Amino acid sequence: MARNGIHGTMMGDKKWLVESMDELLLVEREWLGNNSRGAEKFVVYKLNIAAKTWEKVECLCDCALFLAKNQPAMSLSTQKLPRLKENSIYFADEYHEFSHGGGIIDIHVRGVFNFETKVVKQYCITGANNYCYSPAVWIVPSPW
Image 1 (cartoon, rainbow, N blue to C red):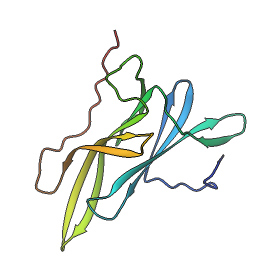
Image 2 (image 1 turned 135 degrees about the vertical axis):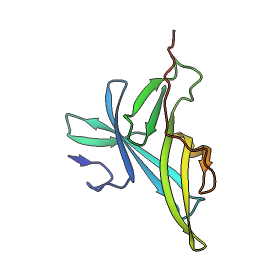
Image 3 (image 1 turned 90 degrees about the vertical axis):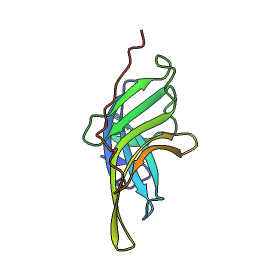
Image 4 (image 1 turned 120 degrees about the vertical axis):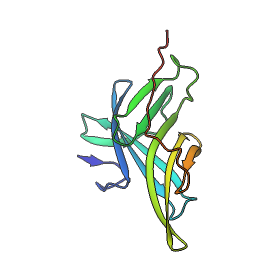
């Protein structure tokens, strides 16, 4: 199955399939940069079953996506859960290892990617000497 605009190549470091508002989405995440000041890039495609292609998504509208390493992805309505940031991707548990000054730096990133501005607000970045890291756990509140 081809993907428009990518010519069939896979560009992301991590990929998730997620059902969102009756659409099947493919989310790709890429770590940009070669040091601890790198950035995140997310690209989202939806499956066009009739054309058998993946089409690039420009807006998540009233949804927030949640992604974590070795966890199933999920999509939540920002209308039903208004404290969530609409058109955003919440992510956790990405591990990056960099060589710095002869040593290795381990970095774990958690943050929120704003799909409109393409900006990441990072939370809880830990390094080799910081032991506050723990695996991600998403707790889904009831909208009622």
